[in-house]
Image 1 (cartoon, one colour):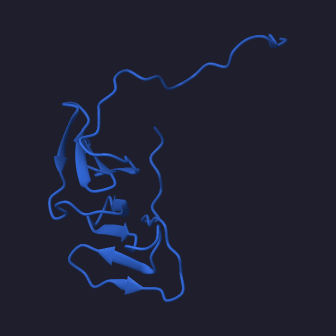
Image 2 (tube, rainbow, N blue to C red):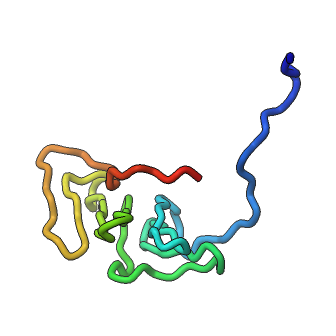
Length: 122
């Protein structure tokens, strides 16, 4: 069988709807691992997006925090790791955990942090 050189590749993804962010600077997106919500970070907030209702709420425990680069919930332990840039830079040398002490890695320039867990296949 010979492939048609002019044929366009089939896309597995398509946009079904768009939802406007409640604050500027959408930055990061990660699953909350409850089957319904995604964490969304913006320039000034950490939000939860309800995938079925297409609504945003401020994520519990975060309030309005600026310069949050990533939020990631561990799927088994539910521990949350957060990366927040410094006032002066887009990076920091500190990893934050909710309900746990910070971990400082002197001299490092971290941008985002994630748990290292096997990814689910969509």
